[in-house]
Length: 577
Ligand code: F6P
Image (tube, rainbow, N blue to C red; front, side, top):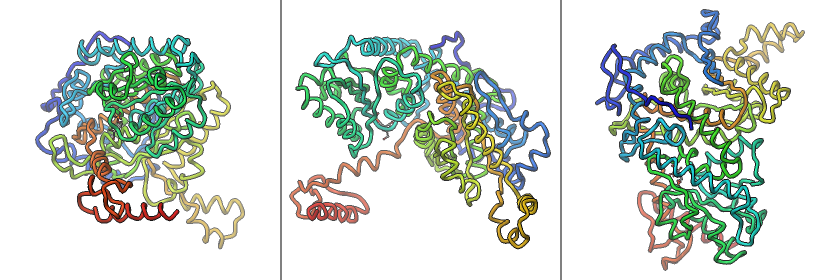
């Protein structure tokens, strides 16, 4: 972790009074004059093509680029002019973004619905959070790295004395996606002879695959669950325990299971030995937790030194976020552009397109980060918003994606905002193959922005000697409208440090967006209803009824008759097959 002597201050502005750190403006941010000015401005921009914007500003590619540390952020193919950024920055100021950043790093209870601090930054930057938090984080880091060192060195062994060579992380959502991404992304840096496996889905397929392939005597299972109550994780952990105990005896559980959680009582009940428990805190949200013991599986596979580099990369981004003027601040600019595209230009989705196979799981990680954080329609004060919030986030690595869904992105009816992300070198240090990736990435960014109009198509076909009637018949099919906005993020290579920086960049961008929309980005009540209803549905006829619906547990709520019919169908079909 990198030390920084100065804690974040709360900068003030002379233009107009900044709102409180909670950003608790009494009404929706859409009532602000700065917001309305952006609505008007968006109408203007909507009539302009990126070609026109480019020809009006010969230095556009330069004017809309920010270079900082290892990053080059190119926003010149966004549908913006200088005025757009000025207006967005002014909006950021009046919604109190500066004060909110300071409040987050200070540990204020900015998760207002749950009355919690939001201090994932304290896991990697020792200038974030209070002294108490830092002491706990330090103690936790010590415990993790000493365990990691012992497993990797073979000082902690399985119950038969075999070296632990396989590590299975059982967790879901934030307790899965972060460590999975880190392991995948840094595969070129695995060391120490441990191979990671991930089990998340409740349908148990992944666990069956693991159980078929692995020898339990050489397997360490990490049960990773902040709450230790998540149905999927509990079910998979219990099944994994039965597998280990079935093969090696009851005493094996203590040697082959460790846990990451805040819930000591549940870890007791599961039988996790005290020395095998790695703590978490309620001030770290699941989707922000990869920096904590949730990253244990990754640290086991990479070693603590690499993991510290990962934390260091994120810490450098934290510093950048706090100390850089908004005009050059990467997360601020990225977040504001996302608000611009989603809310003002009304583009419904964001495609994340890493030109690095190592980042194949990045879109899934960012889906949870953005959609669980900002997929909300009431403000922090509980008022219904009258504007669009989080985009649907999705994506795949290029160049694969070019051969599947790019057709629609280029010529389909919805316009999608795009994030191109690409390292200059491949993860094995390769430049030759990465040249091809870069070449494709740049070409796509250009095609999306500037397109290929009918005149150009006709000209091209004429030059190729195509007959006039064929040109008339096929011309329209070959047109690319363009005007699809994209950002491009370039960095040297996907390493532990740049990966840390990249994830922190997106975290802070999501925070910026939530702040501008006036949301609490740190709760997730939207996941609860389905979980609750699921507990009332049973496929076993254990309630004494004839129809497969457990009367004891009971279905309830609107639509329960339809669900009961589905349960009866399942029971009937299974009896017949
Ligand atoms: O259901 C959503 C969620 O609560 C996520 O926010 C979280 O990352 C995931 O479930 C897993 O939760 P836990 O780590 O408590 O098992």
